[in-house]
Structure formats: C-alpha cells, structure tokens
Length: 338
Ligand SMILES: Cc1cc2nc3c(=O)[nH]c(=O)nc-3n(C[C@H](O)[C@H](O)[C@H](O)COP(=O)(O)OP(=O)(O)OC[C@H]3O[C@@H](n4cnc5c(N)ncnc54)[C@H](O)[C@@H]3O)c2cc1C
Ligand code: SF4
Image (cartoon, rainbow, N blue to C red; front, top):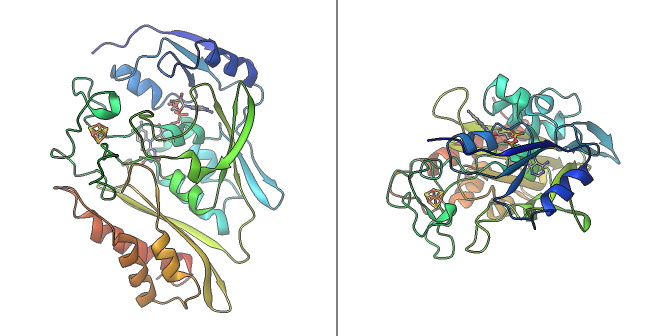
C-alpha cells in the first residue's frame, strides 16, 4: 500500500477554501478540505481514497472552534475539537449528551485533534470499506461483501432493502447526541449559506450519492446550532463498546427527556451503531410522550425502538444490547438511574 502524492494548500478564509473546492467543478474525488486529518489522512494512507489536493481549513477566517451561548441555545464552530466539547461548561444539563458522546469517542490524544465537523463527515469503519483490496458498493463497486460476511459490527436496520446495498453503520457518537438535541447545521458553498436540520444532513447512501451526508462536494460545514431546549430537559449518551476505551460504538443511545407535571414531554431517542446513519427511534418516542416514567415504560419504549430490527447473520446480539442501553439511558435522562 502506498499513499498517492497530493498537493497541499492552506486556505486563508472560508471563501478561499470554497473557491478551491469549486475550481475543480466540485469533483469530490479531486480536492477535499482537511481539518484534524484523523479520518481523511487515515483513508489516504490506506490508499482507499486519493484526492489530488487537500485544502487545509484549520486557519481559514470564518471557520472557528468557538462554543458560545446564542439566542437561548448554543452554537458550535465546525473546528471545535471533541476535547473542547467534552469539557465545555455550557454543555451540561440539557446538552450533557453531547459532552458525554464526545468524551466517549476515540482516545484523549485523538480528541485533542479531531474536530466535530470532521467527526460528522467521517466515513464508515467497515473493514471491507477500509481495505483497499476489497471492492465494495460504497467504494463504487457492485456488491457488499459484508452482507454475508464478517458483519458483527454492521447495521441491524434497513438490511433487507434493495435500494440500500450498504449495511455499514455511521461511526459518530456526537452525531447521535446532536440529533437528540435537534441540532441544525450551517453550510456554505459557492452559492451562499444554507441551514438545515442535522436530520436532513445525514442520509443513507444511494446509487447516485455513495456518501452518508447530503453535503455537496464544494460546500463547507461552518457551524452547528443547538436550539433552546425544552424547560427542564436533561440528556445523556450511553455507549456499548467491545473494550472500555478507544472503541467505536457497538450501539450508542442518545436520550433527551423533560418532565411536565410528572409526565414525559417531547422525548428524543437516537440510536448509533445500528444503521447507515444515526436512527431516530420515533416509535419509542411515541410510547414515551405523555407517559409517566418508570422501568416498565422504558422497557416498552426499548421494544418499540427495536421492533423493526432485521439483524444480519452475526450481529443479532445488538438487539438485546440496544434494548438494555435504551432502558438505562432513559432512566438516567429522567433522573431515575441508580
Ligand atoms: C483510532 C480512532 C478511533 C476513533 N474512535 C471514535 C469513536 O469512538 N467515536 C467517534 O465518534 N469517532 C471516533 N473516531 C473518529 C474521529 O472522531 C474522527 O476521525 C474525527 O472527528 C474527524 O475529524 P477531523 O477533524 O480529524 O477530520 P478530517 O479527517 O480532517 O476530515 C474528515 C472528513 O471531513 C471533511 N471535513 C472536515 N471538516 C470539514 C468542514 N468543516 N467542512 C466540510 N468538510 C469537512 C474532510 O474533507 C473529510 O472528508 C475515531 C478515529 C480514530 C482514528
Ligand atoms: S457494508 Fe457498505 S462499506 Fe461495507 S462492504 Fe458493504 S457496501 Fe462496502
């Protein structure tokens, strides 16, 4: 395996970087923005991905790492590192899930370098995808060797759909937490800025777009906004790993709960490690909304969340694991944990 030669330039501003990305007609394989490099450079070193040019955006004016209170909510710059998120004084109470998710990711050294923007845009950890000698659909080929192969870490939802050949899971922990907090992302491309719900930023790969996001090749992610939370809301992130540290989620659960008159109002429950993109458990949220919290309710919500699961040959263990994690996360978010 050899890393292909590439050109490197440093963008002075967001406008510079976007002009650089657009210069090659937005060809996603030609020029890519570089942030912390912890995913992009790994893929390049493995010769899985070989852009001809990298545009370093870490010092681009208009892109920052700030985490600030704005209009009752919180705005996070795309360059904020996972370490910044893990220990920021604003990310407590209703926003705690984000700090917990960031703190559960990777290792302390990586968290000092890895940005939240790059985290949302990292590619799957599927071992076939990351092996340059294995062709697969997500890399532009035809089939998915994971479907009948080593699929222990793969998806348990949408695994039988002809329009979704890929069964890799999205590797981000912060993504699930941000979705539970109703985050929005602001993107900028040659035509200007657009803001969209994070839920619309993620999308399962299709034949035409073999990527996990709807970010266009000549757009930059500028910032993430967390709106004002419902009064009294608390959120948590819980993660099951095959070792205690430095491991991706086998399953992750982000839960946000607020109680109104002793009943749950407007719950959010997002699962990571189970589908191409983080999965909102809307059926479980419907079970929770308006109900008085107790263990029996949390168990019913967990059953509802997993009702549509269709595990692959080697990952049925994820179903009971996810249910247990959901029950614990909901109890903790409702302040009833042990
Ligand atoms: C050993 C290891 C363990 C890990 N464990 C976990 C884990 O447990 N949980 C978890 O969530 N993550 C984990 N990660 C992933 C890690 O968090 C990501 O690699 C990191 O956050 C990516 O950020 P970066 O700044 O390094 O991005 P880069 O590697 O620089 O970029 C990643 C992608 O994002 C694009 N990009 C970056 N910033 C922007 C922007 N502002 N606008 C547009 N495009 C952009 C790049 O072009 C590239 O395509 C792990 C990584 C490693 C190497
Ligand atoms: S799960 Fe997706 S990334 Fe992995 S081999 Fe199949 S198509 Fe490729």
